[in-house]
Image (tube, rainbow, N blue to C red; front, side, top):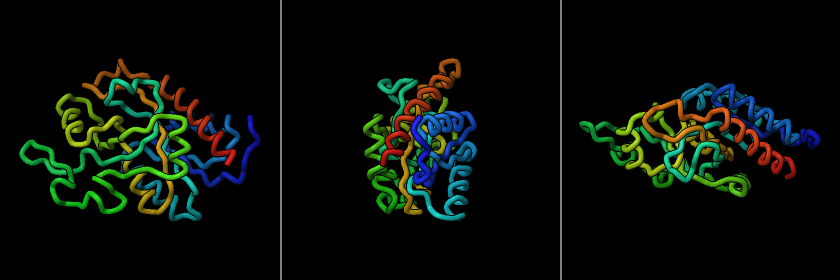
Length: 225
């Protein structure tokens, strides 16, 4: 194990669920990096509120890492793969126009290119993102309030956003950090394919193990900076 690097205590890691926290804590210990880690609760509201409370409480972190598990929309990204998001979006925020879903931006209710958005997405870039991309594939995220578990919803989100992964917190973390001027990255291990809901196909234990492995490598790199 590397010696603990107290100079890196301003690395802040947010997870939604205690199982994700365990994986991340082990990774930080293995990497010899002292990090602040919180469990926010599942969903965007919980994530956003926890981050805002933290940012208002004192010195801003130099980096926020959103870590956890996710579902995959594409066959090339199978359970056990660990990815980082190049951009994220609020995939089910919009208007139900007599059964036809219209994203918030398509309905003229928001500017798709007003910061932090670009084309309706919140992009991730900078030195921390470049570091993460050296270890894992970069993918397009979609953030939902209701996890997709029926073919009609899956098809709707695919048509609107062409995502590669789905989470329930990613865009909320991205938005809160970007609006606060704080660098962020997201690291997600795939636990399941986004398909009509069938939890027998989910590989949560494997995904958490892979999350721990990849986060260890990432935090080891950060510790050396």
